[in-house]
Image (cartoon, rainbow, N blue to C red):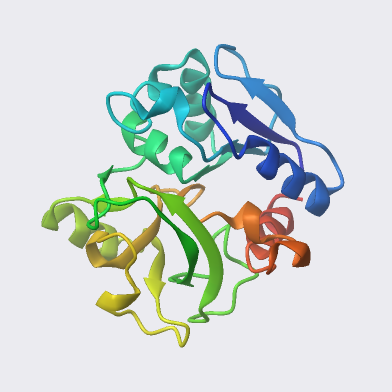
Length: 229
């Protein structure tokens, strides 16, 4: 699997994503600077976590206008898998590749801790390896992770099966107290219409090695390999 990781000014999880990808695939991904207008041949494009452009204006707003994002959007339309993690999720909404927006956490505070999320589907390139309805543990680290969309959009996302992950309790139950940021309907991750673009607030790359405290995130990358190779 050939992967590319986009690097923006302020990215701080690009190396984390690269290390996880190389550990799982055996091949180092291409690190692509945001100012480049072309992408190398890729089966997967990762928009990493961090604080692109210092989160000025809105999180992801300036990164969405980086030259490389035109190529990312074109590759996505051609069917290349795209994974936006945390700030990458914010960039995907700012580019219009995913609907809605990520607002300030309901607590108005930066939240950094492990959470449990539940995959809503196990038939997409990102979730094949996840057992249905099993809670998985991954860390979050954000202040703008509160997913918002209007009711009509949320109903459409529900009906189209585009909600990828929801915040849940350790037993898998979706409850208000399991929601760390106020996201509508406990949404932690979202697919585009094709199921090949995923925006995800938790960090799978930080849960891909036993030394990091868990390996639930590794299954996401293994799912991609299973689907793409």
